[in-house]
Image (cartoon, rainbow, N blue to C red):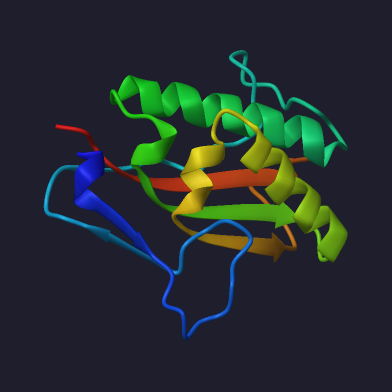
Amino acid sequence: MTEKITRINPEQLHDTPGYHHITVVEAGRTAYLAGQCPLGPDGELVGSGSHEEQADQVAANALTALAAVNAEPHHVVRSVIYVKSDDGPVLASVWTRLNASGLGPAFTTASTLLGVAQLGYPGQLVEVDLTVALPE
């Protein structure tokens, strides 16, 4: 299905740090992943106090979820990254860490990075929400 995903950056819009302003998907099956949290297989928080360690766990969990539906990061058509911080450099470091991970190709699509006041689990600092165009 990857040939049915088109990513566009209109030249009239600002340059981006790797994502695309627009992602167009031809009709097909779609998966909506729940927000991926920095929890290990035992359900315990991983990387307490560390945005980087939590970003790594979130990426690992997202890759596991994608594999469960026979998808890969390049099948992602929309991502939202939530970071518990209002500090620009912290937000940028999480963006950079996720882009350098095996999940990195997911963030070349329509992406939003948000600094938020609170996430769902005590001590949670990072969460990623993905929408996936499933391969045929």
